[in-house]
Length: 72
Image 1: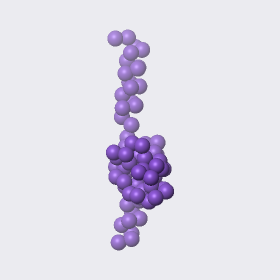
Image 2 (image 1 turned 30 degrees about the horizontal axis):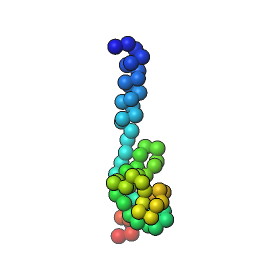
Image 3 (image 1 turned 180 degrees about the vertical axis):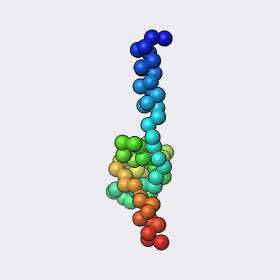
Image 4 (image 1 turned 180 degrees about the horizontal axis):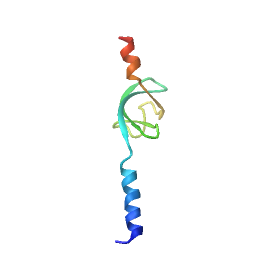
């Protein structure tokens, strides 16, 4: 294996290790809540809804768990 291949493999593994966290998110148009993943770049994607919300929107807002706890 030459040096170039090793670097390519390292770059591929960096892309595979993008961090995500599980969050609750709501559609910014209709307010429907989804279990979602938030990526390290800040984008939010509902789990199991790869095309977005059922209403057609693709913009979501993460529900802040500390806000919800304060409301209790």
